[in-house]
Image (cartoon, rainbow, N blue to C red; front, side, top):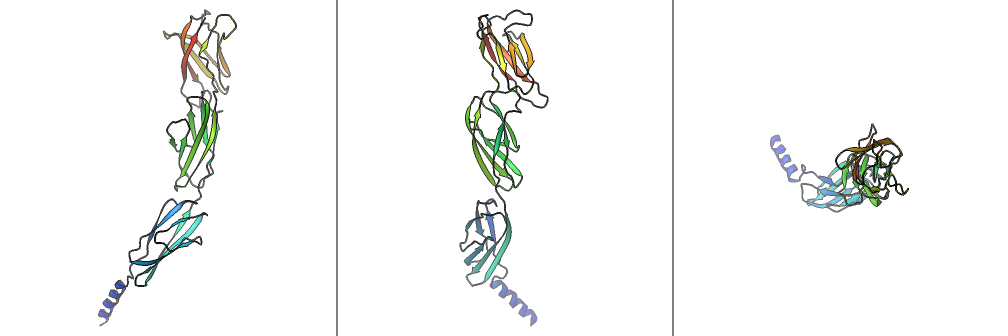
Length: 276
């Protein structure tokens, strides 16, 4: 007789859904001021839903959205009422992270010689480790994705550019900022000079930012070196060859190298025309 009562009790439990559970999931990044989607995943026929988001806000929708204005740990609770008036609930704690506060600066002091180059340095206030930085330098080039807080970028020409930075942390929290960056030529290389004794445009003068040693090599069209020198602030060529004779009119090829021990940067290359 006891055995029969036991089976009847089990059948009643299943018929009333005692083993059915309220359940839910959350979609979206658990970040402050970001919209989250709360999805009812209960496995019973539900007639009413009651959500508590842990911050004093509630909802009676089946699949509500909610945005947390504060950070911290919030206990989310879903209570459901089934068609036969049974009640079930499920709850879980969720941590809401603060979004990064993004900022950046530009620096040229570590660029020892380069036309139109800048180092872009992230200065963001971070609450979680960074997953990646996304830079758009405003010159029509494709955005650059990196995990480094410093990025060296070289523009093709001077001008004012709207530079945009987006930071994504490992919780998926994001922020972005844009600033106008003015790019000026800090490494001036002329393309023509006239060493003819008229005291006008007599010398080929290369001017740098003066922060480190650089060197220049100038070649004839046959590949012979006609001038080689190192300097800091500027290098001057008066159009004479190593033997003291003046070069012939024509086009010459130059290569400028950085001689810093701790920075690798591509050489500056180009042509200089000599008129007489």
